[in-house]
Length: 368
Image: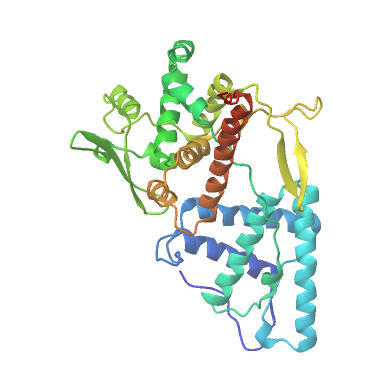
């Protein structure tokens, strides 16, 4: 793949068409493996889709706002021209983010993903293609948004695993969903890894069964000793030839999990808060009636992994051992969020224990 843009020592700007040509070149380089991660691994399709989506948003923005994209080549600019270039990118950032926030009503998390993707594209132009576009993109700031982590409490997970009355109430399709969900909460795998499991991922050593997996996302190997109920789930589906467990699509599984959630925590109201420009806003399930979401609405495939990690931590398993199960790096910010959440559950449990001391009758003094 050859770059078809000629840049001379006198070229000061690249046109609107050149900008989108280079963005297409960047996306193609990702898909064909010409651009890789720092560790040499190929860019995943899911990651490249973010850049495809960025191109779509920029195209709509330029069309609706009559904005012309251009690239300034800073090596060939005078000081005055460099100042004009800086003003241009400041104006672009304000207009583009206003378009995303005000016109499209997007939240901080989604806007930040696109701004970060744009910064990656500019770095590619500078470093990989050696096109001197300057460092204007480094001034594109983003708002960070902490998405609420939803996990099942130990008693809720216990209910899913062991309650026979629940099994009798679930139809066959939801029983499969429950089995997959319980297994996922136990081994703390990502959904893609869970759906990729084969019979060879299970090993028996001295009568103990282990699930051994290499993560599709990170390449990290994990080994988890399986409890009896997880082995029972595997045995239930041993008739499957191509996979260890039933294989479902992410969208279908998430949809059915909402149904399953109604049996666990449908009455637990959990207001949905998202941020726009750093300010929290309440999002209603029914905006007209101001109806809040319930915990059941939040249960997704991510809940399995989060529940598995948090359960292990809250039950006292050391952090470094839990990381071996989850595949997180020692300095992972995401992992420390689980640590904080599990500490919250531990605090609640100890508070309840100490509160019971108030109801304990004091020891009577003996009289002599």
